[in-house]
Amino acid sequence: MKLLGCCGALAALLAIIAPVAAQRPAVTAEMAPYVLDDAEVFALTNARIIDGSGAAPVDGQTVVLRDGLIEAVGGAESVEIPAGARVLDLAGKTVLPGLVQLHEHLWTYAGAPLSVPVTYPRLYLAGGVTSIRTAGSYHPYADLRAKRDIDAGRAVGPWMDLTIYTAALATPPLETQAEVERYLGFWLDSGFTSVKVYSYSGPEMVRWIVDSARSRGAKVIGHLCNVSYRQAAEMGIDNIEHGFAFTPDFVPDIVEGKAKGRACAESALASMDFVDIDSPEVDALIADLVASGITVTSTLPALEDLLPQGGSTAGHDLLPDFMRAYHADYRDKVERGEGLVLSEDALRKSIGIELKFLRAGGRLASGTDSTVPSGGIIAGYSAARQLELMVENGFSPLEAIRVSTLNSAISLGRADLVGTVQAGKQADLLVVDGDPATRISDVRNVEIVFKQGIAYDPHALRESVRGKIGIH
Image (cartoon, rainbow, N blue to C red; front, side, top):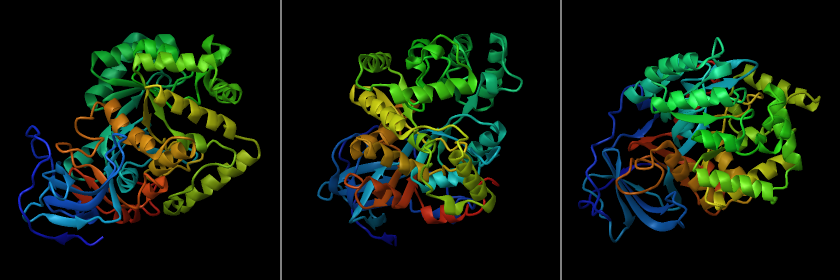
């Protein structure tokens, strides 16, 4: 899109907002190849706004961005264009909040974990994802370096909340409360801000982790299996990951502690085939979770990838040859009956429970999870697929967008900064061609991504990683 300058009068704010310090960072030499325009003031005109709150889209809007913040939002008759602003005519385009994804990673998989601390942040940003929580790391120092480089302008990517794995995935495994406290203390002091409980951990270990994390102000997320969702809520876990596909609450052997490790996951996945999502048991679980205030993080691309036929291949053209070959080999293994598999009926039921949870007043958030065994989920592209899968399974487009923006921002504790298109918030936005409120797939047509008021080029970001994923 060609960016044109124009002049006008000072912007008239629609609402009185408290002064906020300038947030727009300087464009460094490392950032410059991916920046469309480094203007300090933008005026986005003739735009359709989907604000992320769930409200209906509004056409013919003007959005003024200054010093990394959204200065004004409103109709052309009420918002004047500041003198010297870079004016973008967005007729036929839609402005949305930057996507906020809560189950992401800076590693992927191709027979072994592969660190992607340079390529994946660029792909997240190219897909309109401006804030992420990582959901565990096999390469913690690489994650810390990636965040620090992005924050310092030495690299480009989304804002990150970093999560450290705990317990059984620590090396050596943690066995006592004192070991948990020392382990978490080290990583939280090093820059991680969330902690992940993994499915191998039982109730006692989870309580130790929650207590230790809480004492240091960290949030706790859980990929659960040996602890039920009700137990997690009672213990104070902040987020349950992967929606309801791995719900152990309906499997007696899991609740009674008889199923461990991979058998636990297999039992939970298989049980979804027999769950009646309109049963009193499901309704009671939803009611308990809603009452607790816990967030459930939906990761539908990861679940879709467990179907016998696999999931979306969007972005696979960027993969190096060895990763494409690994993915093809993995799909062949699934056809031979190997690997973890989810049925289409189980996927539909899991999504159906997510929708019921949301409409009952539960906080459903969004993520994608790039670490599936097939290596087939590509950062950024998967955020669009998450939205599509929600809408394909009963969510309205505006519900899905809210889940992937405001709901996730609330869960992160950052809704005062991001998650909606609103005067006074950080200028984290994406501009797409089309109308996602009518065709959710239009979220793939990303033309500009604003992060802290800087306009990034999605095409340049994607092309910069071609053939390098899994290597950088």
